[in-house]
Image 1 (cartoon, rainbow, N blue to C red):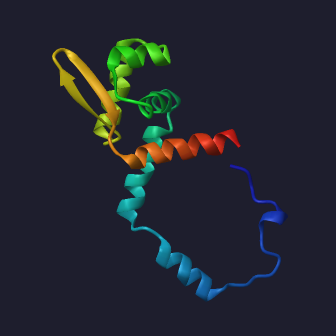
Image 2 (image 1 turned 30 degrees about the vertical axis):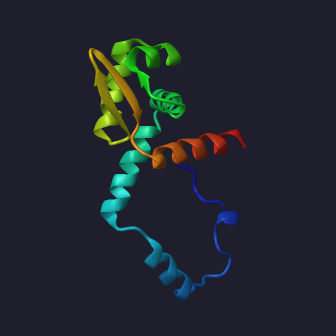
Length: 120
C-alpha cells in the first residue's frame, strides 16, 4: 500500500459530526461485511469470473463450460464446487450430466456491473 500524499489529506483538522454519524449509521453490520467480502473474493478470481460470465448467458453443463473457458473438466468442476459452496451457482443433474446456472439475479447484476466498470 502506498502512503497517503499531502493531496490525500485534509489541510484543516476538522470533524463533521453529523456527516460521521450519517456514514456510521449507513455501515452494514460486521457479519454482513464478512459475508460480502467472502463473496467478492470468490467471484474476484479470473477463472471463476470467466465461468460466471459464461453462465450469465444461459445454463451450461460442465463439459461445455470447460470448452468455453479452455480448461479441463476437472478444473472447471473444482471451481464450480467452490462457487456452489459460496451460493453463487446452483446445478441440476440430467442423467449423468450436471448443468450449472447462476443462483440469482444479484450475481448477474454484479458480474455485468463489474465488467462494464472495467470496460470504461
